[in-house]
Length: 236
Image (cartoon, rainbow, N blue to C red):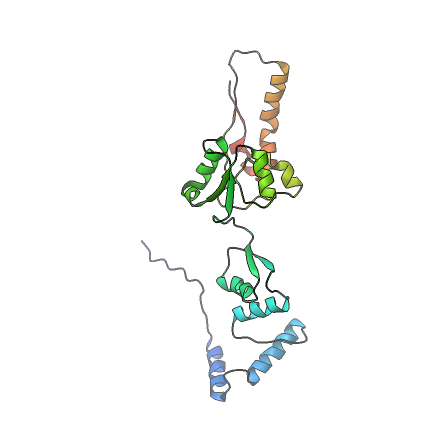
């Protein structure tokens, strides 16, 4: 088995760069010397800015950007969760609050359907061992009541996609981008083999078989390429 090693970064330092650094050390200037001024002038000229300021590292640069943007206590800054700690620290240094945009915290209060319900069972299937880590604030038997509670900012929830279509269109609710979700279930159109269906039942069955996958795509916002695996199945 090969000894695979994948570094975070492959640092390449040419000899010319080493010579330049050595020259700076020999000059006796370790900070804010003539080389720093030259670099700032060159960077300003390259970017077309009136001024440029060299700092010790990227974290300090991000901090200055946040200060220049006027961030302070009481402000919230949306940040991705897949990032380095420096990008969030720079926000926190100003007193502002970082808000991760693409995750739902397990520490958020959860408002769920009652245990034993189909929705609860699906949530249990989707979250697995993480379900035990949720801070469940309320268990409610009414989906409509849960939606209103989430809209009011009382917590987050796990609900069937088709039950929140209208609220999504109105911008009252949002779907979090969570790995492994949405949880997909298989549905079947069934009836007795020899039963003669009424015209209304026949029309409804054909509607589901012909447009069911399309409607699922619309509600769950899933790519149409995955449609085949979720297509309602004809059973007789």
